[in-house]
Image 1 (cartoon, rainbow, N blue to C red):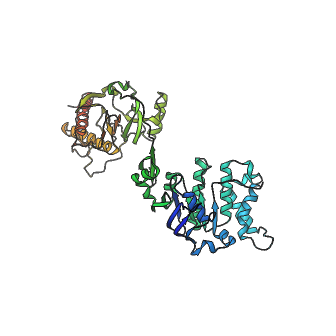
Image 2: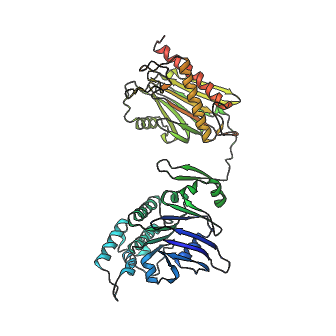
Image 3: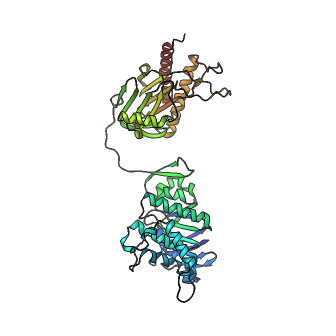
Length: 490
């Protein structure tokens, strides 16, 4: 739809854009990315005709842009720039009506019934109807941006050129605008060429991206281009970490500041406080730890500082465990958004807490254990849905600096150790009478202080992995034996 061939241009005899080639397909959402000074706005002005081309050419729908009349351009292309100034004191509706000018017929260029219907529809979907009689200068910057978008959409273009379209918008209206543009792209085959400042927004909405640096493309490709951390760090000169969006298959980027926290290393044994009673166990650290967990609250990988295990009755209704935990935590003035939360029906006074230095690393492991729901995961017999809370809950705290991969390794090491303890204790699945590998509702947490040398591995073949395994094995063994004594199992 838009084809740029060997494009050269800028504001002086020294070009900013240096021989670019680009092919944007019909019906595509294409995002132009790059830091300030990379040439994004210059390229945009060349494509929109606001500054002259010094070399090469730009084609739209197979026709050279420079050969199109103003009216022909207006029928094919609409432009929404960052600038929201309007020279004359028009009302909002008057400005939006200007977008229909290329389609109006006759000498007097009056609005037809179709024009009015299109205007009303677009004003409604862009949520500017309430401002129709308000002077443009009297509305906010974000509202102005929505009005100018409405003006562009009533133009019914084949191509929409956007320069930082969400620059004046808050988060809510940013997503409303981009959702609307995405819908028009998909339903009306609209081609969108947008300069976007936010890499994460570009990843969520664009089909392809171009990374511009010093007037040249570093790469043009699909959104997986944004998974290349080294390349982004080179272009933006900021440390970048990529992670996947939790609900859509798109990359999201985290920027790391250059400043370093001016804090002294913390002695692990004095960095936390444990509160234990019949209702809950609460471990609170002074500073957040890097965590991985399958807890009812705080599941996944996070930075958290509160770690809780709440007691529930054996007949507890498990229909809304997350809401229940949030309520219980708030009652104890524990912020759920900063916590891992677990549940158990076992007696909390039977908690096992081991604190040791293993292989030069300070560690603490807390286990509460009940094995009434013991399960052999390798057996293919499908049990009835279990809603009991007879569970093994394990918390591992370690004074080390783990990568995310090491967190996963450490979780595996802890799981292997728990399973070995159950095997040695001859805990069996009551449905199959085979050795159990765990219980049906186990929760596990691994939390690291992120102090010291960076550790990329924590599996069973490493010293730290063996330390985790040994501590979890000992704590699980002691906790299960205590449970057996309480239920008087021989």
